[in-house]
Image (cartoon, rainbow, N blue to C red):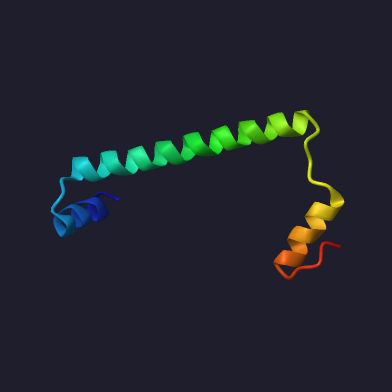
Length: 68
């Protein structure tokens, strides 16, 4: 990992610290988004907010798959 970071720093003209912080920032934002989405989905499920059978079948048909 250290070699890859050094190579990327050299190739991009950025410091290793900049690249590491940038990668960490992206990772944290992605993880925070994912956790928020999971929590939202749990709240919807707890409220009984599920797709109907017809909605699920329509989505499968849209993508050319059989829901059964």
